[in-house]
Structures are given as structure tokens and as C-alpha cells.
Image (cartoon, rainbow, N blue to C red; front, side, top):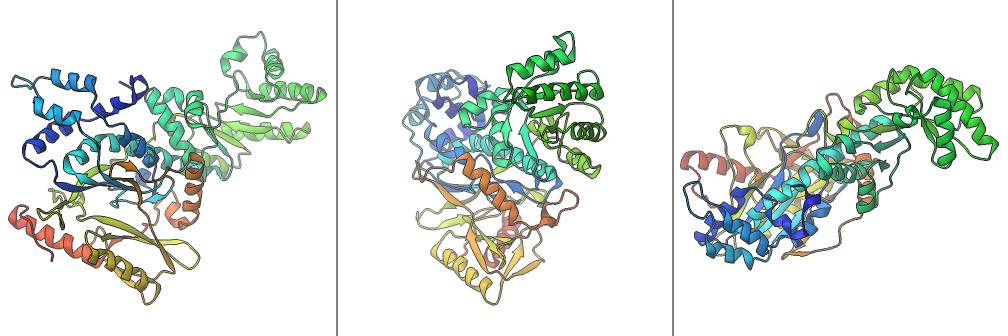
Length: 510
């Protein structure tokens, strides 16, 4: 089922993996209904072998939380499910609990359009462990793909060097809902428009499109087709010139452009969708300029991505705009961000103190960061980002440590430990700093209205302007420092050591 097939918004409650519900039932029966927990959404590696990612999807968290309600039709479906060993999968007492469930969590997230780096929390969820667990799959579904698309788009925008980029991925996207997601996230990432009319309606994104090869092929001659289209759409006239032969196509476009000038109109652009785009765009630019049509733009499509666009400019291609479809919509060559949702702390029985926990795993690469985490992003005197540091703010002492670190960084320097290498330390000297995570949900209610897509798009641009160009390059980007405060690094080290020996018995950090 696609989200576009949902009969009502609250169907989102069942947009989850079954094991979330079976775990919730087990928590219910184990008496953990009121046990508070902290979960983090994060990914382990930057996508596309790059140096950063752009947070996206977090602006829709409020709508998600507001619609998680188990109504009678959902409960009837769950009631109908049978356990593999026989009998009902879910017990009536638990279904009654779901019927009365009201989400009462706190959620903090990185705003859409802001930078996010490996292993730091993109989203933090605090609340009753059952509720946190029920939100896992839907949250990951919301932010994983959109973060991937927004990041891919910024790379395409960077390669395009200020030229217009449009999302043309609708017909190649993974279903109607995937296409809507691509249109939304690519706009936040910097795309100027989308070909997806439904996305334009839903998200108020500019839409763009002209004609296809079938238009030209439906006429006896290409020139006849061009004339008819110019007559029909004189204010939106881009002619696709590669149906038969680009050299002849541009000549026919020139004829139509002259005819349009004679009646007070102007040909907007020509589009090339096949062949050697560098060579053909040069040929077209030369002929257009020779005919005094320097205002006519050249747009290109045909399986473009950041690397092909970069190559086109290296070859001197005079292209003014790009329609990027398949490789943007499918996030080629990396179709998944790999974001995960892991428990990092739970509230002790005194209901006052947090117990940090971590997942060890057979692979050190998959070890998690414990504690109730916050992110501080440090900047140099020019406002350029220089490092992110994670702090454990599970108590007042932790919050005070965070404040002292800010003072230390602006005076003599603040020492932090690399998030992956415990033997690597940084001395961070910064002129300023900022908190990265912002409250989204408090006690189950929206904290503040999310930023508009236009605001998120502007934040993307501003964020990237503050990132070192070496971190943004496509080949072997410089690794942006992400570190742990000394206290959090110590907690992680103790937990790893003790859990290895004691198979996860709790350890006190007081």
C-alpha cells in the first residue's frame, strides 16, 4: 500500500514493522508501560562517499505523531492476525491499550536543510518505551530516503554551478509516494522545480514541463510540430530538438524563434535529451548566437547526475539548465542511507536519573553512542563550521559540562575525542557555537510550526556555504570532525568494557 492509497491519515499507525507491535505487547505485559527511554536516529557513513548529509524529512515529524492513532478498523485488522503457532497474535488487553493510546513523547531533531554527519543523532525521541518503539519504523521511513535525496540534490546543484536544476524523476521513482518524496526533498536540496504536478499541488513547489518526442513525431515534419507548440505555449516554449537530428533540430528551432520574434514573443529554450551533450550544446550555442538568439537557453537531460554534469562543464558545454531524473529519483548509486534507530538510555526506577546503554555488536563499526545526547556545532571567526561535539545531557551536571565546553572553546580551547577513534583527540578553538537539535514535539504536542519548504531550502544553501569546500568535494572529501565530550567518551569506554565482561549488567556513573 502506498501512502497515497491510505483511506485516512491515521492509517499511518499501521505503517510499521510487525515486530514493533509484538515488542510493544511484550513491553505491556512486562509492566514497562511507563518506563521512559531515549532513542536516536543516526546513520554510520556519509552517503555517496561524500563528506556530509542534509537533514530532510524532519519537518514532517509533527504530522506523523499527530496521526498515530489506533482506530477501530486498525484494531480489527490486528485482531484478525494469527500467531504462527496458532491463536490470536495480539491479546485483547493489549489492543484495548492501543485503543486508548495517546502519544506523549518529546522529540528533538535537526531542522530540514541543516547539515548532519555520521553517528550524531538526526532525531532524538524520549518517552514511554512502548511509544518510542511504535514510532521507530515510521520515523526511519520518513527521514532516511528524504535525507538521501536532499543530499544527492545538493551534489547535483554544486556540479551545476548556479545553473537551474529541475526534478524530472517522477516516471522512474519507486511508485507515486516515492516520487512525491523525491520532489519534496529535492526542492529542499536546491532544485528549482519539479515535473510532478501532484507534488506542486501538495507541497506548493514550482512545476515545469514542455513537450516530449511524441509531440514531434505526431506531425509530418519537425518544423510543423515546433510551430504548433510555439503557437500553443508562446510563454512557455522550450523545444525538444533531438527527436531526429540535433543539427537540423536547432535550425528548425531558429526558424520558429524568428517567427516568434516577429509577433512579439520569444523562444525560451531548446532541450537536448540524447547524444554527446557537450558537443551538441556547443554546436547549438554557436548557431543560436550567429542568428542573434543569444537569449535562447540550452537545457539538457538524459540520465544526468553530479558526475556527468561536472564532466560537461569540464568540456566547456554551454548548458544553462538541467533536468535530472532517474539518477536523482533512485539516488544512484546508493539507494539507501542506512539510518537506524537505537536505544541510548532508559530511566532508572527512581524516575529521576538516566541509565546510558550501548549496543556492542560483533563489529566495532556498529557500536552505538550511549546517553541522552545533544550536539554543539563550533564555528571559526568567519562563521565556518569546524567541528561537532556530542554531549551527554542526561542530568544538570551534563548540561553544565556542555556550557563550560562552549566557554573553553572560545578561550583556551576545548578537548574532545573522535567519535570513531578513542585515541584521537581534538583541541577545538572556536569563536562561536550553536545547538543543532531543536524541539519538535513536547509531551506529544507540536512545539512550534515547522519551517516552510522555502525556508528549509534557504537553510540548505546557508549551511553548505559554512562548510569547508574540501568537505564538499566529490573525490576523497576531507572528513568533518565529529567528536565526543571527554565525559561521554569515558561513559562509552566504561560501558563497552563492562558490557563485554558482564554481558550488559548496568554500571553506575555517579
